Length: 277
Image 1 (tube, rainbow, N blue to C red):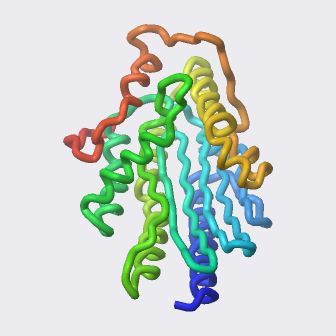
Image 2: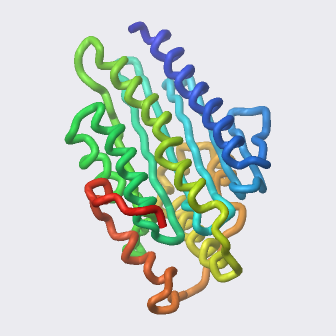
């Protein structure tokens, strides 16, 4: 496929993914609406999402295209979510990359199992061995080294995907487009399960504290990405509110304290499904 046709196809994948996710998220939220202009579409103070950002980016110098989705829900029992998909092409090479991961404040095994099973089904369409590799890469990447702590419960991450053969580009592009399409079935059912659960100030303060971990990772440990990306887009995708507290320790035996063991990487997709709690 000629380079110009490849680039047009990638732009179509990214633009369609942004358009469809914005529409689906507005339906899921119920009251919030995304801004109607610009490559960065943002919803603020919705009924379900305190902030939701779906960004499309294109650069023609060395052709780069990407779609980013960052969701900060209002209810502390709804996990935050992040996904990034990208394509890069130079004069003599091209590749696709992507990541999807989940950032809960409270651990629900049914949510983790569902999320990882959907991602495994998606990965299996490429190669039955691919999910284990992509999950391990995600677990290794999204950590806070100075705390020896995972940012969330992981998901998948792949980079430099360049399948061989005359049909390699089309298959790589189709797999990436399918990853964007997997966001809705992987994440939206969790939102519907948790968005109306009652909560109070304790849960809210814990949510803000966990958001602080997200900010730490983005601004400290993701610095290499931050240097290459649009600073305004990075800051826009941060949670609207977060907090830090030195040496904060949750009450032993509490649901907040239980999150630490929940964040330890495990093979969620292989676990026996449990009833949604």
